[in-house]
Structure formats: C-alpha cells, structure tokens
Length: 90
Ligand SMILES: [Zn+2]
Image (tube, rainbow, N blue to C red):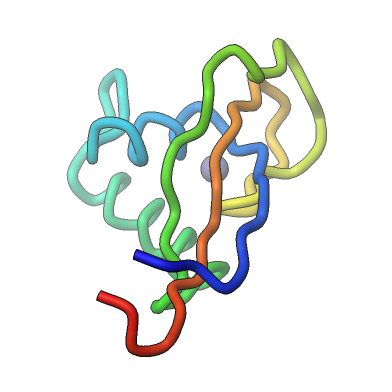
C-alpha cells in the first residue's frame, strides 16, 4: 500500500482503543461506540485510514482536542496516524 499523505495525530484514549482493538475500553455501549466511530469518520472520511501509533510517544495529559474524534475533554493523548492511500493503490 502506498500513501500519498500521512499526518501524525494525538488522539484520546477512546480513539486509541478503537484503533487498536476495534472497540472502546470500559463500559462503553454499542451505541456510544457507534457515535464515537461516526465522529472519527466525519473528521477523517474515507479514503482516509486511521491507525494507532507508537505508545512510547503517548502524552500523559493534555487539554488539546482529540485529532480523531474532536473531543476536547482533558485526558491522556495517544499517537496515531491518518493515512491517505494513493489512488489506485491496493
Ligand atoms: Zn478521540
């Protein structure tokens, strides 16, 4: 796969869980998970792809908004990547 553009993101814990495991940690309901995925999709619509980054680059605490879902709740921030596949790449 070739990517034409990549952006480094700092995402909230919920997004980090979703990118790593496909589900949110804790007690999140299916509805909450779907809402969160929808927020990520609206900020990074297809063909953008999000993937988790290196946990060694995580930040302990930040008030900056999540780069994936846009949440501005304070909390830990985790490295992730947004990647734009090259047209025609498989
Ligand atoms: Zn988030």
